[in-house]
Image (cartoon, rainbow, N blue to C red; front, top):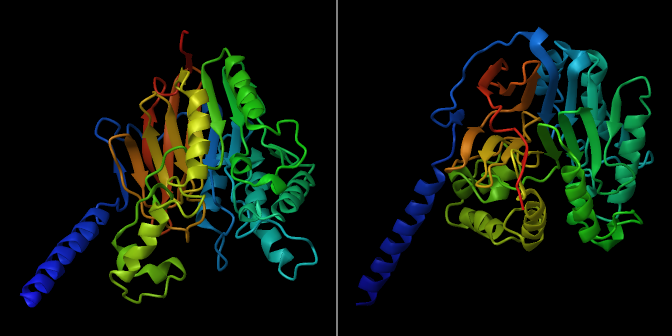
Length: 400
């Protein structure tokens, strides 16, 4: 009888484990595009582009043996229309812990990780905006504040370039940039919501409610057509930070530490995704801290539709249409080596398991084209998504 019970438990456990593996095998390979949003064209008349915004995140650990392919192609696209192009670097500009003091023996290594991104601005003659991420803040450690100030000072030392670091002074913002009467960018340092009090220095927006009120004011005061909010942390995501782990994470968990550690650890390996989904890391959407951030930001933007929320953090490319009719762009795959699995759900318009970046082309006739550029395994650039997204990104205020 005891043996029968043991066999039964083993069978039940095997079925459960197989179910987990089958579920996690539903990740995107290559890229996924929702039906009805297929590629419309591979080219656009550059003369009709009045404003181009390129979004790239988590580019702070570029390839060592060659120029990072994603940055090379980002520069190429920016160079086509430099006077009208702004590149927004969506945080995690220097891995793993931001820019240390010059006394650090590896200071030049970390500095060069940022310089590689600055070179894109320098060589293309476009405009650049860098915003901070959790790694720039030394993952929330007390040294993060000084690391942020050092990064800001380094970026703004290039006074011959059209480049800035926003929000400044280690404060959360919001920083408002009006590209025209019809295009407004609102920038938030989202890591500020995650930092403890020792990292919340004497900023004017020192209280969350004051900050949220100022974000709302920056939106309410806008009477144009297109509003973009840029912050490192996404409000929605379907990669590891959002709780999705593929079969590799369950069977070969040590590959999270090194690409070469293909040591099978079935069952034990599943503990890591399980713990992550319990919200142990405040950088995962499942954590209480992250949920607090999402709840407070959405309490503001739920009063509007057609808002574009651009983020990095997750090393994937995603376009998500929220129930509130706002559009969430996740562009955190700026380093080829940082490959995270990604899945899809009913809100997914695009999900890509390839490095690259996202672009918004605002045309002189009022149309808006949403583009996704990816670098394939042969290191060739492909425009995998190009869609007339005017209706998706037209800003509207809800009547009270």
